[in-house]
Image (cartoon, rainbow, N blue to C red; front, side, top):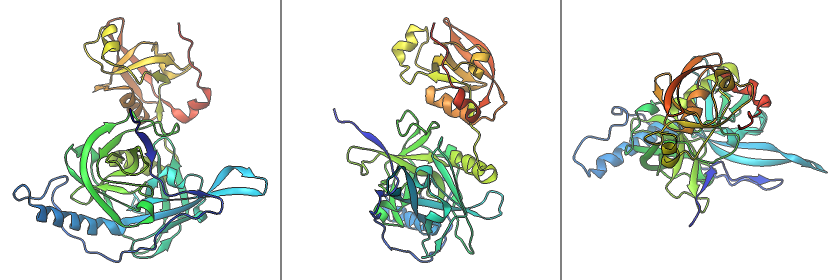
Length: 381
């Protein structure tokens, strides 16, 4: 059996004196056009490829001016006897207006710019301008970063509602694969709620849209847009045997991106909720049946962190969390994402399956960063 490897799609990186590949291709000003309702395909008979092609063209012309290519020089550890080492990375970003309307920012993946100082980051615009960020702020938990930038007449992209995205809808992916800036590919939404995926150990909150729109190294941080020209995701990773696109692209939903970016710009840090539970990623129908459940649903607890909100609430090994307040829990990743989005101090009521019956447990969410150094699992009975 062949193994598909999940790969973050940062740029072509090199250590030491090697240079990244980056084309000088630039695209000038483009026109805007009126678009139909979000996610709605063009009207007309099925198979009207000309109309669909025209829609792709309109969307590309609308969004491309706000798509930037990013070059970042990062410090690499450990250092050599002759001094520090550096690595060069490249990726893609999306120009937006700050949420309070006060200025501008570029949204990208954290793995594109992590470890780079602002003066070592270049933002190349579609019209040939080069801008430098005044700050680089990232969140490793979600792999989202923002670059504070300033300028005049900066084109910006608009967010759509990723909760409205449906499987089968057309989307475009825009980015800078292999340094080829202003590239556009197309596909459909293949699946939603992809989370049981191994990327890097730091990325704890994982909730992806899956698409067959092609991305390649250098595309990380680029927008996934609907046929209204709205950003519904940030392209992040692929599943591939070769390291190049194989038709499985993973994109962080825009509603999550917007929430994280807003906190980074306003506070410089993101608050992630935490209960202190080690969850079973392989909770299957057989395991559910053994516990008396009629199907594999919810998140099964393998262990509880000592001194955590979960322990204080009385949660135990082999409990299965079925609901958080009124929200049914699909699996372990869904529970992690849901709790991570809650602020510290919020009280939640959990419906828990224990000893073949459902019980209610009240818990208070803590902040992940404040608890992380203290993690110690309660010994198994």
